[in-house]
Length: 391
Image 1 (cartoon, rainbow, N blue to C red):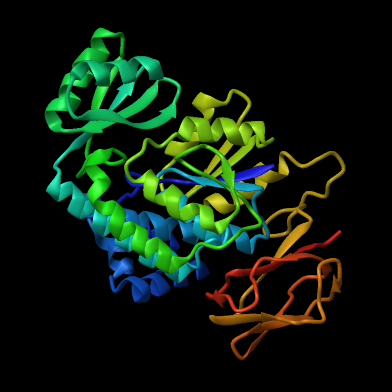
Image 2 (spheres, rainbow, N blue to C red):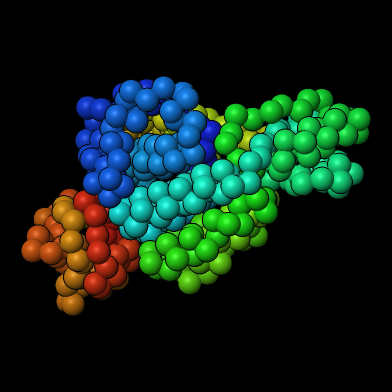
């Protein structure tokens, strides 16, 4: 039971795209630049910390970086049982599972970032991390501050983020220290995210989500809002809208994943913050952070180390895993072959459908488990189409 988790805003770093510039997955950057009308390559290669701190740049670059890592991992033949993402990372998770196409994900993230930036300009605010204090006492500190300040993130035991007006956050931070917090640390952000200060952004986001029309998925995504696994596309309009001004219940998402049987957590994207949160929250969690191409071999070794007794463990891109993805050779509208269904044996080179005018050929032999893409869906290059079981 493997969970893929995706980081949120704040994980971006200057030059985080450089290790990927010569990797095949870099093609996603060009697609993101076309979809966003932004020079994403320049942001990933040359932007400094101040430029990346801008909400509009931070969200887009983190989203694209995480999906580059996902693309590289999928090329190795891995797919997860569940996905989850922290704040912005939830949009990455939805794109990873096919609820959103890559193009729709890029456009939606850009609209979200623009709307949040504008809301932050209209309602200036800040955020602070409260360390070493129980969740309930942090909420008490916010209430006792008697000001515009709220809990924004339940990240891990003893790690809660508050947000609101500068005065409210300062007052709640002081009270939290009085109640026993080890530290109150100001965060370098441009707004009070996941609080009522973001309410002006909700209408713009609702319109953008409706246009993207999230789809049902085979792999469920755990929502930040209710910490419940969702696989129905029509549930995400209200969830993503509510996420803007509601606290991110990340600790609760991790507990849900654990209850569902997940013990292995792979963080895909820049930084390694989520891996640390998983270790703090779940005593039996196995974690790994995959941020660069050099991490891919470590990821293979990490997965192999959990292989059941008797499983064949090989090196490089030859995996013990028995599941393989068939991905799209081009962009266009997908049409599966009517003569192929789940349970059919698929041979190497066999056509399972068409994307536009291009045949989708299987690179593997195995039993078709399910189509991931549906009739009439607009597909991007290398988007997963179907998955096979090879043994």
